[in-house]
Image (cartoon, rainbow, N blue to C red):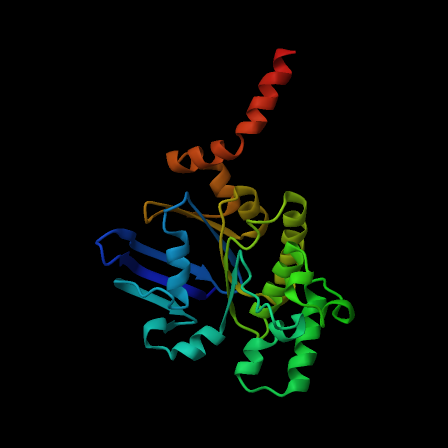
Length: 256
């Protein structure tokens, strides 16, 4: 399968000399979901932001659909990439319908087209357009705002979707609902997705491939099954950290 996103020996060093990405080479298959794991400061978000040129690598190349992003027209590049973050960044004085269609508005699309597309996408993310289109962001719950943010990211029908801890601020039950919704949506739409998360269970549930970064270096790029079976020390430590509660509960049960 061809690569939707390709990193070729990508490095990034800050102006102060700190190396945040160190020679990363990685191919994200077209129409697949790749989750990027790693502790805080490992380079996850930095890597994600090189795709839409919010960060310019100091070495190496990033390609989207075979084109070097450095030579692409920046506006065209970003309109072809949906971007979803934890805090959705909705415009507080725009209605939900207008928030979803704001990219189309910037492209000069007709009002009728924007309204139709916005309502179509609200339905796709599980929000009844008749009920939600005219509401304002402050009238929605956190989970509902996150659904609007996802709808907005898909408004211009991008081939690539970048997601940076999109559900990190949500409670566990709402987060699970969002994961179910996203998984069903991606099964239908076949986007190339790069998902940054700290949550191993989220990565295992949503991703076709799991990437682990450590201190700006690529430790692993594996299927979920390979990741869980790995004996790589960094992977074993990461998995163990997520299952400490289970082990503790088991030890309590055994002591009774």
